[in-house]
Image (cartoon, rainbow, N blue to C red; front, side, top):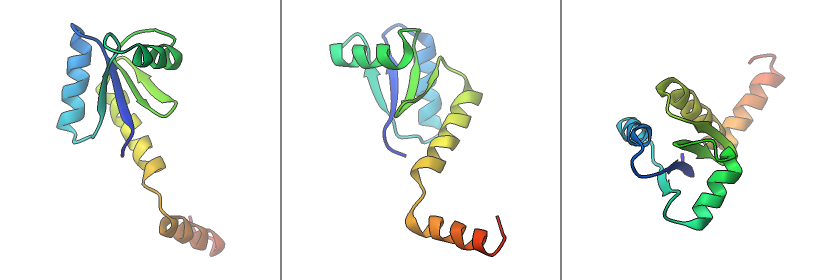
Length: 101
């Protein structure tokens, strides 16, 4: 599950909680400090409209703020969209052709 990004800023206790939660759940992610890089700041603004931090992002999908429940749902969704390979698709198609799920 690559390409998970966490936009943060120094002094944000919710950002610290978000980092700790992701680490405890074994999620690989990249921390992007919005105060350290203008490009990161622009990307954060484009994604979140500058609403706040932390912002957990995977492509254009995101969660603004920190909520363990929403993070768990988000990561489950990311796993489903990034872990599908050709054999899984073929098995699903065969099951559908036979009238299965």
